[in-house]
Length: 126
Image 1 (spheres, helix red, strand yellow):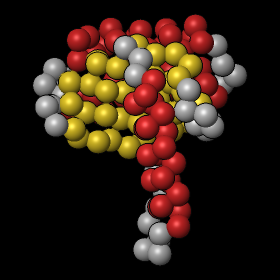
Image 2 (image 1 turned 180 degrees about the vertical axis):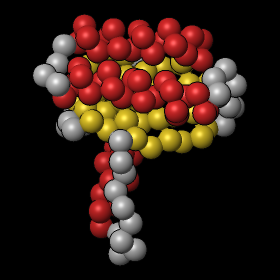
Image 3 (image 1 turned 90 degrees about the horizontal axis):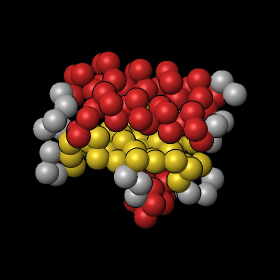
């Protein structure tokens, strides 16, 4: 995994989202420390890491036989903000964006799949 390649992937996402991208961080799930980011939010990353651990653990232990999280999960936040947390093996990625500046269909059907493909080649295709 090359931090320079991760920065390029984030820069490509920034080009696609323009000023709709508010923040993006890539971090290790083990320690919650950001490796690279755009408008990095280190305190938020630590919090997102804990929330993600708790969500995964809760779903795993659920008596309701709930499935686990797939590649990502999405939170619709107030003030027209959206947050996507992507899960890749030992890495996690947060994407905070302004929903007023990007259509959700375009985000989830075009941009996110492209970004996930790039991340896979950078993070897993080592």
